[in-house]
Amino acid sequence: MEDIHLKKRDLWFIAGGALGALAALGLGKVSGKVRPVAVSAVREGYSFKEWMAGKAEKVKEDVQDIVAEGIHHYQQDLASMGDTVKREKDLLEKLDKIVEERLAKIKAEQKAEQKEE
Image (tube, rainbow, N blue to C red; front, side, top):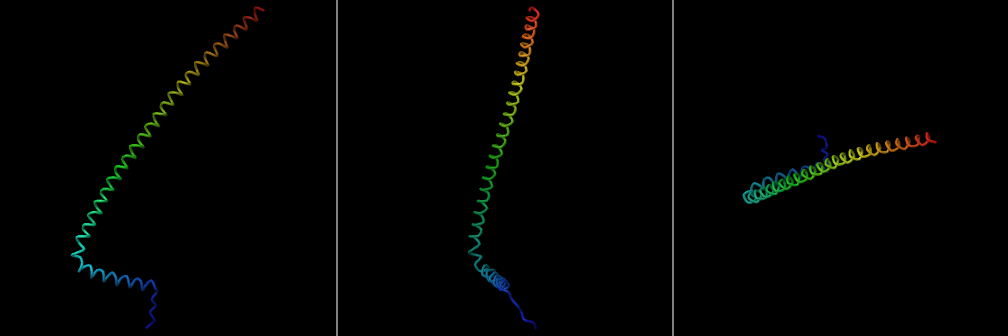
């Protein structure tokens, strides 16, 4: 028979298995006393989980409302800016037309003066 070589990791694995087996045997004897405490702990943990889920849902809804409101204000600003740009363009076109008419009038007056001379 060949020599058996055990590594440190293998020894820890065997020791852990042995402790797990002992704990399982001991838990059977103590389970009558531990079970109500474990059930109570699970109930409280589940209650806390439900409470946190409710709070998380509320926060999620609040964030969605804030984002929707921000998008709405942004779109209103864009629409308002578009209206402002359109009004400015119309005003500049009118001003350009007035300037062209005045320049045409001045040129006509200059030509009339030159003919008189």
